[in-house]
Amino acid sequence: MERTPLGAAGPHVSVLGLGCMGMSDLYGPADEAEGIATLQAALDAGITLLDTGDFYGMGHNELLIRDALKGRRREQAVLSVKFGALRDPAGGWNGYDSRPVAIKNFLAYTLRRLGTEHVDIYRPARLDPQVPIEDTVGALADLVKAGWVRHIGLSEVGADTLRRAQAVHPISDLQIEYSLLSRDIEAEILPTCRELGIGITAYGVLSRGLISGHWDASRRLPAGDFRSRSPRFEPGNLDRNLTLVEALRSIAEARGCTVAQLAIAWVRSRGTDIVPLIGARSRPRLAESLGALQVTLSPHELARIEAAVPAGAAAGTRYPAAQLAHMDSVRS
Image (tube, rainbow, N blue to C red):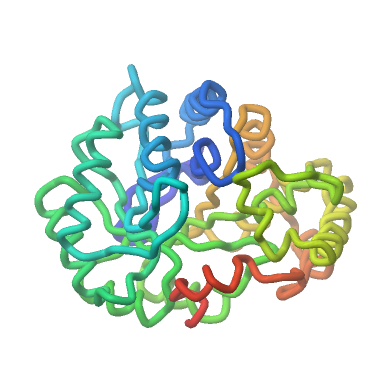
């Protein structure tokens, strides 16, 4: 597994990372044993970057990662943790809290659940509109000085916020959705990251399974699967988006790879400063995603992909309107 620097100030990480959310939350029932086995298979394959959030399953995901790391060297994993999302016992969402005193509290619980003395990258899940980003990053900088945190990241923020944050402390990376169906960052956010030396960890590279090649219109989602409320999975929008997937399938078949591998390879082609986070919940899906590392797209293939799925082709927004209202990156 090749490694790459995550921005000018970040750690060296594997060129693919593993997004762990679905092993605990938001995609319906998950198999805990398979989640641990998938995490261990990813580590064995050389993936070092494990991305989680303290609110994924209300701490369950961090405990899952701790169990997967038992008996391994701590240095084998680069742990990236999001904080700040507030939830209730029913799993509902109640905004964000990035006050300095809250950050220390969140981190204390995260360190205990992960069974570690430091987090490699710590980041607010969203911009807290009640707290200036300078105060949030300043508090994180204090945790870096104390040794509890190694690097500071951000998630779903816009260009202006990136500049203000970078003026307080070096930012390793911006975690943000980026895929063939979600390309808004190309206009301003991605150029700003490159100007400032901030890496990109791209989540949603398969648009939550929509462009994996495994989805069909007859699929019924279980209770608790947030895709049932996603505009891109709504009737009408779903059919239009699956038409785009079929266009990709013909390109993938000609290339001798799967649709998922083609979509991941496209994200990788956008620059060495972009690390795709694959959201595999099982070993077979992990193995398929790892196969994308063997796919190097030619200029002709990239042109075919761009023609099949041009920017802005997706039907429906990537989140419901209520969630988009919390995303600083959308207003950039």
